[in-house]
Amino acid sequence: MTSARLLLVLIVGTVVGAITGLVVGGGFNADYLAILAGFLGCLSGVIVRNLIGLGPDDTKTPWLVAIYAIIASLAGSLAAKEVSDFSEITAPVGIGALAGLFAALLLAMLLITYHTHPGHSPTLKKG
Image 1 (cartoon, rainbow, N blue to C red):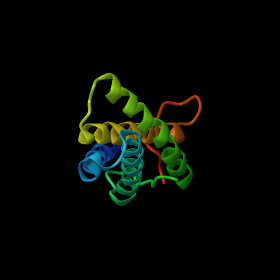
Image 2 (image 1 turned 30 degrees about the vertical axis):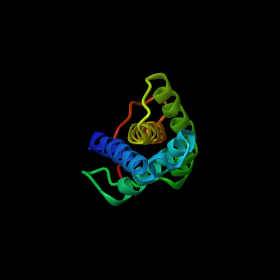
Image 3 (image 1 turned 60 degrees about the horizontal axis):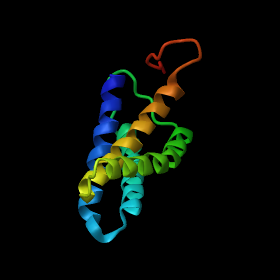
Image 4 (image 1 turned 120 degrees about the vertical axis):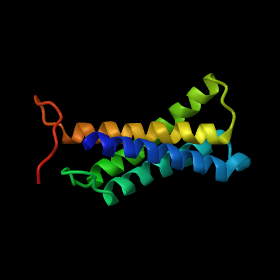
């Protein structure tokens, strides 16, 4: 079920990023749009992961991981902006979706790293 929760974080982050791009549209510069979409995508991923409990692993996202993920969403958002420039994606929805996906991906990687003990493979945390 850990995989399902991580996929849920990725899907929610992407959808919220795309909706942010749709709502904000051309009102912002693409850099600011990517940062806003990544921030909201990451924040919504944390909230949804905390609210929806899937399976036996009902651990919440630690606040330290959430803060690091929100800070990392800046890097993910700007990386998504660079990818969109390279692939010539100019639609605000596409930029927002990429920024949300990259920010949620960094959140998922931080969660996996946080729950992995040194020298062991990632497993479900009990209790």
